[in-house]
Length: 141
Image (cartoon, rainbow, N blue to C red; front, side):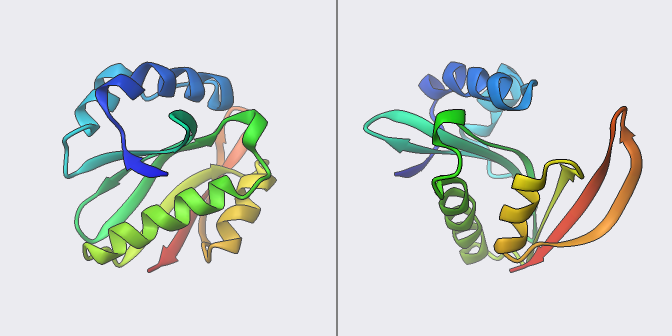
């Protein structure tokens, strides 16, 4: 089930981010997204357990995906596709016309998911990370 995050989800999301991404947006930013119209975070749950999470900014035209992760034991099962696709459909209904995101060029699993959902590379930031380039992807909604 897809829903906006709640206060009680934040600690579990922080652990999920650290485990899958190696970093976190942090308690303060996640807390601010609970009731914000500009910064939003969503979780995909099954029986009350968080399977995945996505955080984004939304200026009522452009959606920028900030963090997006699925618990390691649930990766490769279509949950990421379902989560991102459902969130994009919700935001599109609110007037969004495009979505952008940044991904490491070596993260082929994520890149394949984004391409499956219709994202296209619009820019490459050479050496953006110490060990990798960053790809900027865009999807017209």
